[in-house]
Amino acid sequence: MKRLIALLAASTSLAGPLAAQDLEVDELTFGFIKLTDMAPLAVAYELGYFEDEGLFVSLEAQANWRVLLDGVIDGTLDGAHMLAGQPIAATIGYGTEAHIVTPFSMDLNGNGITVSNEVWEMMKPNIPVDADGKVQHPISAEALKPVVQKFKAEGKPFNMGTVFPVSTHNYELRYWLASGGIHPGFYSPNDVSGQIMADALLSVTPPPQMPATLEAGTIYGYCVGEPWNQQAVFKGIGVPVITDYEIWKNNPEKVFGITAQFAEENPNTTLALTKALIRAAEWLDANDNANRPEAVEILARPEYVGADAEVIANSMTGTFEYEKGDKREVPDFNVFFRYNATYPYYSDAVWYLTQMRRWGQITDTKPDEWYAEVASKVYRPDLYLKAARALVDAGQADEADFPWDTDGYREATAEFIDEVSFDGRTPNAYLSQFPIGLKTGETVSESGVTGG
Image (cartoon, rainbow, N blue to C red; front, top):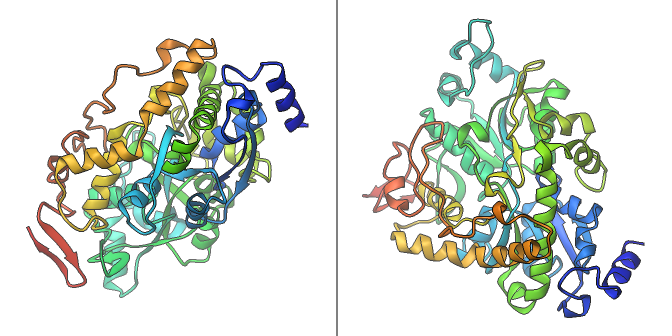
């Protein structure tokens, strides 16, 4: 039926400025992981935005991030909901080598760090409370440091989970730990565990498996996207201690990734899919999130996230529950369009590159110009703005909603938990500010850090 509607729309010129016959390819398969931030894909499909562009799209959940990336590279998938670090890492040849680009940033914020009930009870004496006895947020990793030290003194590894070596979650968890004086470990060319010199040992667990892994005692905490932090609360097995919004206010999260070859060979199709995704993101944030309850109903379906609607709504509708019963207003926990969330800023790519360098995934010091060059290879605001212009010209979007005059870099900000200032134009100066992390000239081997 969806295919029939799309064909009829194309034949009657209802598909917008691009007629269906102008599309280089119109049957597409997109991959995603079962997380709430895949929402723009689900919404674009369910509300017919892909159909409006003459696209016949199939959405397929993937087992994990590596399978998803491989699918885009080998052409099994035409594009995918991706960790922002994946296109960047692939393009510089860390792990899998392939030129992946993004014309569309999918969201801001959306992650949290959860610890087991046992660890939470050990942390609580170290956390300030307000006049009503409620825990004060944001919670610093300094409250966790004595717990990690106790485990270490008893000869027990303090294991934590993250979703992928180049995920936002990995870098946010490392950032939070290091800001509290807990070393999260380095990578080296011959040791990609990321546990060299580590106080807390980070390892990979797929997002939907995080709560069960925590409950089994294999890990004592994790960083993941929703709904898997709130799932721990509902199951009574863990406590989210901080959101990524509190680690870095309005941080970039997922992107939509396609190969550079796909974008080059299929410019009209790339334009069409980007238009559909922009419309979906705008719908998700429209009228002060008025559409979020409907979005929750869509995401709860088994073919998308497949978690209970009540669990998904706990964060998607402007609140976030920390300790059981401690639900607080967090209206920007999930942002899909506000604050130019969909624009692929070069500075966002630069931040991910700085974290790769900070922890040894980028082995050697690079000049600032290298960071800018890589960012411009991967993040494609030119493609984004072309799609935005087409939507404005068609009366489907407002001119004022897009950053037409930006140079691709956000203004410098110190809205991090440690108040360190980040300017994407000066990545090496940014890296020099951290007490924990590689400095200019330093490299990592299995025996530790040398040089500098």
